[in-house]
Amino acid sequence: MKIAIIGAGPAGAHLAHELSLQGAEVDLYDARPPWEKPCGGGVTSKALAEFPFLLKNRSPRQMVSSLRLISAAGRDVTVRPRADFAIYSRRELGRLLRERAVEAGARLHLDRVEETARMAGKWVIKTASGAVREVDLLIGADGASSVIRRRVGIRFGAEDFAYGLGWHIQGTAGESRVDVRYLDGLSGYLWLFPRADHLSYGIASGYRETTPAELKERLLGYIEWQNPPAAELIRAGDPLTKFYAAMIPALGETSWDRLQASNSAAGWALVGDAAGFVDPLTGEGIYYAIKSATLLAKAIGGRLSDYEEMWREGFGRDLRRAAALSDRFYSGNYAGASMAERMVQLAKRHRGVRETLCDLISGDQGYLDLKSRLINQAWQIW
Ligand SMILES: Cc1cc2nc3c(=O)[nH]c(=O)nc-3n(C[C@H](O)[C@H](O)[C@H](O)COP(=O)(O)OP(=O)(O)OC[C@H]3O[C@@H](n4cnc5c(N)ncnc54)[C@H](O)[C@@H]3O)c2cc1C
Image (cartoon, rainbow, N blue to C red; front, side):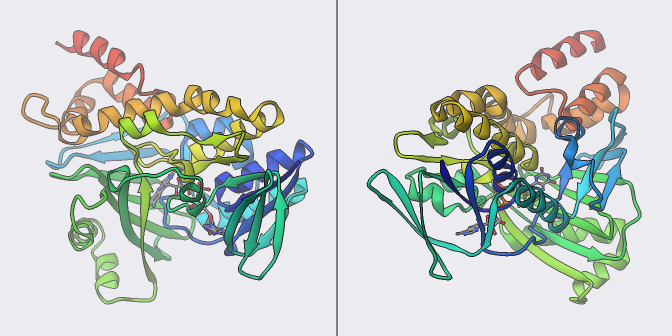
């Protein structure tokens, strides 16, 4: 079977690897060489355990053993998940994944796909360089603003996105702790992620919930508090600092219910951000990009129509639950404060809550059974 994958980020490159190993003829397109995509680059220990190739390689990464959670009111708790998680430079992670795809037999084209047309049961692909190719299956792995998603008629609304921005600051790494700070009055958080050779500061909230200028000021306020020399570099526009901004899918409950990520009769499928496969509560997407690619490869090896049930069963129902929790987590009122505020407060005092939090961060605690675990703990506390 001839397959074109549009986008060689984690989803597209991993899918190309898996399909090539299965013997498919795969053309993998990306408009650019591996790049420093706007992204924290954090990969949970659950993802590292499920996809060992992420660790068994020489790509530079920063392993992280502890995470400091700071509530909007300034309370903080430091937690140490059972296993370390990793923070990658996206350029390095991209390089690794593309190399694996090519080694497995995929043809990688550094070329922007500009047109796709359905003709006589095939897809015809045209690229910026003028190349034309006819394939049996079209895969959209082209990220949050996917053109392929729109091309096949799947629409997300403004409310299905978060917006993130931040700065990478060269030469100031060396930390092995991540900071996450929840935001007063906004559904999102800001973060400090240490990377192998730079620090990554970022902030994200619901798209159009506030202005980029306010997000910038809030993040700069935090950097000034934590790392005044870094804030000075940013304010001076020093070339050691690099600004980034991007959209992150954050689907609401009804969008999860409506979502269709493939159509076997029409010969298309979506993976990763293009399909909206991102945790709406945390913005974690690298794991879901790789996981959805793994599931889609299995479905293509069997029956493509099985993909819908596979992704819903594999992670979709859990992420829908996260969407349902999101409002309450960031702005709900639990005895006069948000769930995030209460979570930090309780985690400081109770080992059981700290352990739940560690499991959530490492990816070992899903959202579907989170409530019952927390209720059990609440019984023990009160
Ligand atoms: C600010 C921010 C912070 C984040 N932090 C984290 C984090 O810490 N941990 C985490 O797990 N997730 C994080 N995410 C989410 C994560 O970045 C994505 O979920 C992940 O990159 C999705 O992978 P993907 O392969 O689906 O898409 P992408 O990584 O976006 O790759 C899509 C690729 O498609 C290519 N492309 C697009 N259009 C075309 C075209 N027409 N022709 C050819 N190529 C094309 C692009 O060049 C790109 O390389 C963050 C996102 C943002 C915005």
